[in-house]
Length: 319
Image 1 (spheres, one colour):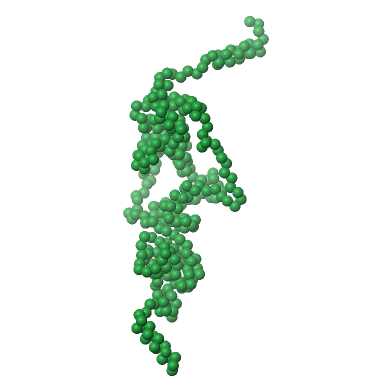
Image 2: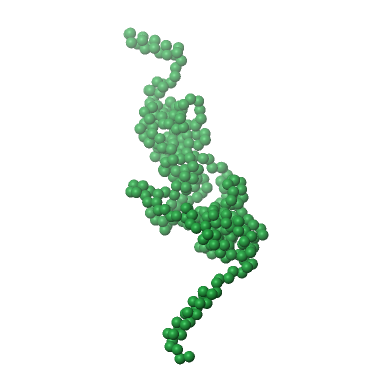
């Protein structure tokens, strides 16, 4: 009694420090036991880079007898991570592009190019339009250099990478497909979405399923778009075969659209020629594509015809 206010505050602070030092955090023994049973699984998933939340959801999905809590899994992951220390893949290495170069999301671009079997950027756009037209989709590209205007659809890729891929235990395609189906049904579609605050499965049934269109009656046919130059012989090359176009397009750059059985050629989006893709010989030529008085020069003639023509020419010359 009678102590100054500052002295009382100092005494209370020392008492709090003392109590903190002598009262360690206690974990209910039942929680420790429920996760210790699955320590081997948790250790393996931690080493593969899985985070506590994805490990907890994997245990609930893949281990029927698991009944532990998320905090218990998180504490064990923290202790395992501290014992393991930093890994090589945890080191952040900046990648700087020098002037004149660009960094590209190559994984996405490679998948799209492989799907449409094209290489040129413009050809990719044309193939993409064909798919959108087939399935009645609208293309709404984001403006360049405007990351804040991009859609949020790519966020799902990051969620899959963080939550599912680190817990994938088999490299077999069939096993991976089954695991992905379970993850999609039991975890991804049942979580509370961070932005909408709703379960994706509920939102899909209520808002999206009624708006879905039926699939087209005709199956989509894979299409290859390619730019080509019309050569002096009024032909262009595709797939080690030559196809003719009207001779007035010699020297022009045209677009070639190839399906499994047909090749169509376009100039300024107008079709100027169509050929069967498969055929005998290395060349597909329509006589009407050549100049009127020179078309016959490219026709093959039998030896008797050649001799007759030669004789006629000789007669005209001697007269």
